[in-house]
Every structure is written in C-alpha cells, then in structure tokens.
Amino acid sequence: MASGRKKVIVRMMRRGLVAGYLPLAGIVAGDSIELLDLEGRVVPVALAAIKTICYVRDFNLDDTVNPERLTRKAFQARPRIEGLWLRIIFADGDQLEGLAPIDRSLFDGMAEDRGVYLVPPDIRSNTQRVFVPHAAIAEMQLLAVVTTPSKGKPVEGERPQRDLFGD
Image 1: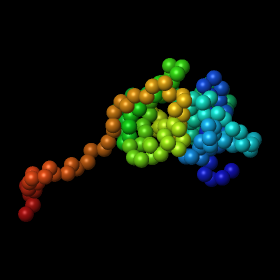
Image 2: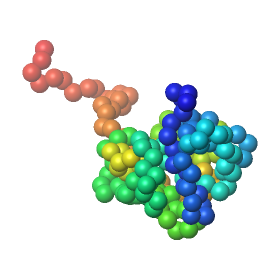
Image 3: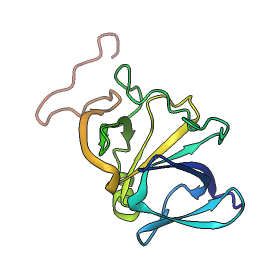
Image 4: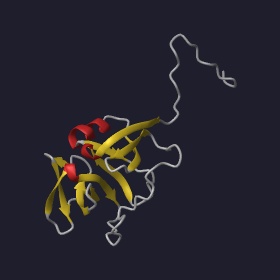
C-alpha cells in the first residue's frame, strides 16, 4: 500500500458500505472513485451512489451499523478551530455538520473532487475527515464563519493608542 493512501469507509446511498484505501485528495476519476479494497483490488464506485467517504483511524468492520464511529453529527457548541461551519442535509433527511476550510482548498476540492471535505464535530472519534459528494447533498447551510481573534489593522487616519507604561 502506498503511503499516500488512507483508510476509508464509503457509505453508500442505498444502505451499504465498502472499506478500502483512497488518497486524501484528487479521488475522483471521471464519475467514480477508484477504491483499493481490503483484498488489494481496485474497485470503481460510482460517485452518484456514494453518501459519504469517511477517512478513519480503524476499519471496525465488526460493527456493521456504524464502523466509522461517527457518533456526533452536530457540534454541541461553537467550534474552536477555524473554518466554515456547514450543515449538510442529505436526500434521505440525515444531517451532518462539519468545518470546511476557509482557504482555496475548499474550492479546489469542489472543482477537482466534485464534493466537500469536512472536519467532523468530534475529531477524537474514529472519523478524522469526511468527503461528501455533490450528488449526496440535498441542501447545504452555512451556519457561521469561525475565525480566531486577531489584532485588527488600524483604520486609516486613526492614531494608535499610546502604551500606558512605555516611553
């Protein structure tokens, strides 16, 4: 296995899942992905049939219901890391919240991979990253833009405040 491939669990729209290996980006070839399955075969999977691709730490295939262990699908409070706080509503009514990057990689992922990469609400769980194809998204809501507080630039013409204890 190449070091560029990571463990994934592909959840299908029609109640099934497939485990295997995929690269972190550039996963779409035409209208499908080429998944390296657990037996070492390259298996094409149609993008339109995929609900989510979860990049996981362990496969946990003994758990047939939730092997990706994505127990929390929504944030309990405002996220602490930077990103676009998104809520995705799937065609079956299921919902998933996550953080998308604020930089250009968000648009690169949408253009190259035809979907959105998200950091899930519980990063300590088995799922570290989620890819949701456009075909699986019924609705996407922007809940907030989460940024870290930074020192603002002074407004032009405004004099900076003098240091109280300095020179």
